[in-house]
Length: 137
Image (cartoon, rainbow, N blue to C red; front, top):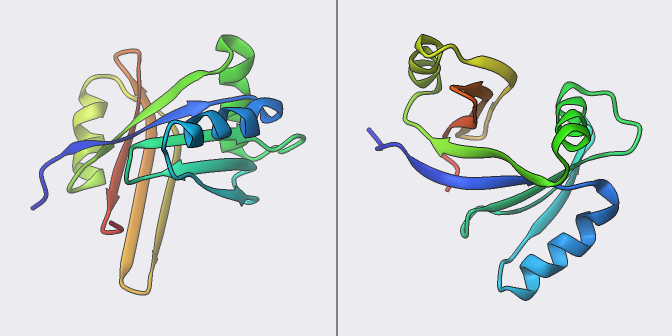
């Protein structure tokens, strides 16, 4: 069983600032990989090895994740959207968070080719957390 650990921090940034913020992290030495996740309505730039992710809603997107990120940006502006904790079992970790009044914002589960990834994005005790169970290095 893998011990839980801090995996990465996700910064929400407005779509119009995404490239500039990504360039700043690149200039700092991060190696961001960018992707458009059309089904989620977001653009992400991610360096899992160094623990940074940028997320921006795709303009006009209505998917739940895009709406959640846009609501965050509307209320708080650019900032820390969530802290991702890698856990050995998403369901077990969710049960713990529920004991503390967690409100689920988003969940996704992907499997195939010998890999799995389950994410549960939630707010618990006013902390934005994502529980991540994956075997992807």
